[in-house]
Image (cartoon, rainbow, N blue to C red; front, top):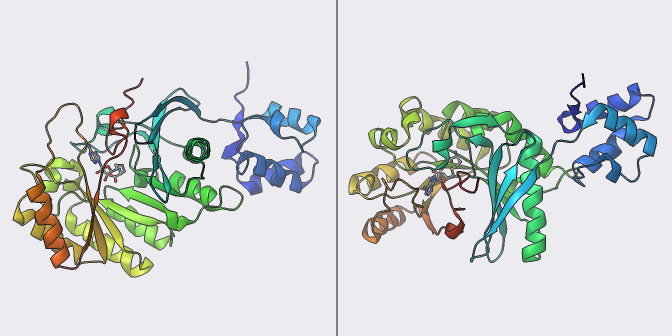
Length: 347
Ligand code: SAH
């Protein structure tokens, strides 16, 4: 029976160094291989050209290099690119490249499917199948960076964890991936250019603050009234706004990083003055800004974007209270690449 080989990228640099010492080689060999695996992102031992043939064959006997494969690439008329990415066990997730004037953003997935049940999100229909490993998150970023260079002549500049899944439900792996993305031995990107978007899990927001993470935080709020929020984001019954608010105050006290609230205004759901006032109150607890996101319809059509009058009421009221508000237009709609539309339609 063939023994299942271990994925070499599950090893830390220290473990790799120890492995080489145990094999009678120098610890330094571990550093060289580590650089091939992460900084250079090679998928085959034979491509590690400064490693001797014997060593490469030895590695081949012990390990595999699990890696993603871009299964399908779709390009939108606005320059957005959506990758359907095949994982080593055949499951598929999606990631998106969003080009703008001064930046290129990668929107990456953190889980296959999602365990939360947000009523307006296409990914919710898939349920959660599994967490992504750090290398699977990292590889999505590498793939987008390569596409950015190829199709837009510039490297990737920003990353948002707004693809499939809830990043704080896969916290350890997301953190490990970000460590690699920001490390000079990986991609060397600044953590300030990374946003982790969460539906708002209080305990984990506090943990992030305690871990003194350097990336930015966005919270998908959508309503500052418990009843309304629970009706569209049912987990709010378990983690009510009072707990979220307390966690966000804790986050700000520790990190001094302001919070972005993502917010969609829907017809008949959160488009009244009462909803606007509740949001203004919520924004007072910690320095924050509001990103009004355009709604991207998903198939069953239960939700509809509110009219521009409702949107204007949000904008003018927030501005009157000196709360920064931006309106984010959706990108890549023609290829189902916009927020909340990632649901493996291509497969
Ligand atoms: N689970 C995380 C990250 C994934 S969702 C989170 O909840 O933040 C990324 C963003 O897209 C969230 O703000 C989410 O509320 C929003 N979103 C989900 N479905 C959407 C839709 N159909 N139209 C617009 N935005 C949507």
